Image (cartoon, rainbow, N blue to C red):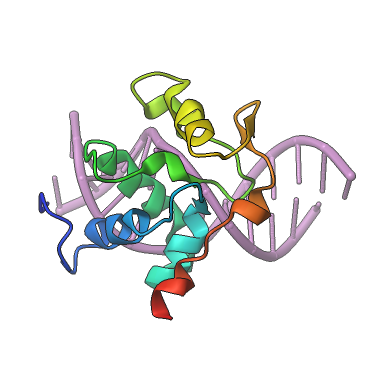
Length: 114
DNA sequence: CGCCTGACGTTGC
DNA sequence: AGCAACGCCAGGC
């Protein structure tokens, strides 16, 4: 695993590179990232990558939620509310561990291609 | 070296 | 329309 987020061919690093690109106050889904990486069927890997990513402060894992906009991985943070508070601090409405206006706040990795 | 698990997603019943 | 099962791939034991 590379400490920096350089253009490494590693799947994990690939995920980090995308997550880091997520604009402030914006969120995306595991599936979107997986699809962007070409492994649309491997959405689980994205979540798995985030698990390892949570050790990297540079990777805003709190901006990544599941397809339903639910903070599924919040339990993996320092505190169960860290993820929700982090999103709220960015202007993302989070109620009951769910992102409000998810579609509106949703950020598609495709913009990286533009 | 093989089995189990895991922050998801999709399809089938 | 709600619930269950399968698939996917990689890491840990």
